[in-house]
Structure formats: C-alpha cells, structure tokens
Image (cartoon, rainbow, N blue to C red; front, side, top):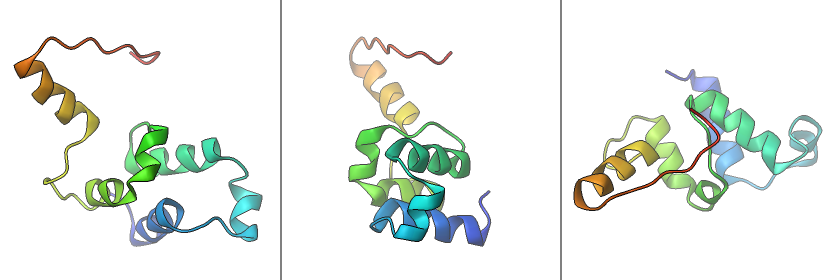
Length: 88
C-alpha cells in the first residue's frame, strides 16, 4: 500500500501540470509514468494519463474501476482476446 506522501505525489503527478521543480525530477512523460508505476506497482499505459481519476481510484483501492487485467479478463469471457506485450 502506498504511503500518504506517495498518494499525494501520485495525485499531483496524475492531475496537475508539471512545475519547473517537478521537471528537474521528472523531465519526460516516461519519467512521470515510471514514477506512477513505482507507486501503483504496475506499468502505466500512456492513455491512462488521460483519465487520472481511474488511476487514483485504483491507488486508493476503489474496486468500481477495473484494472487493465480485470478488464481484459472480463472481455475474455465474452470474446477471444489476444494481448501482445513485451512483458511476460
């Protein structure tokens, strides 16, 4: 579980414009995604940054929002699904 400090950092990075101070620590979108992934404990897909409320809900343990794995598992019940990924 994320600490209170990590939760605040996560919400800031997921929802706010990056400040000059942030840019010295997280100079690229990939750096922001990497830090968010460290806090959340899974890879962050670029399109997820467009909907930060879902990332925040997942971080806070709100089960009403599906994770990628939950969503694909639900789809697999209804239709064949092929997932292509570099990760195992």
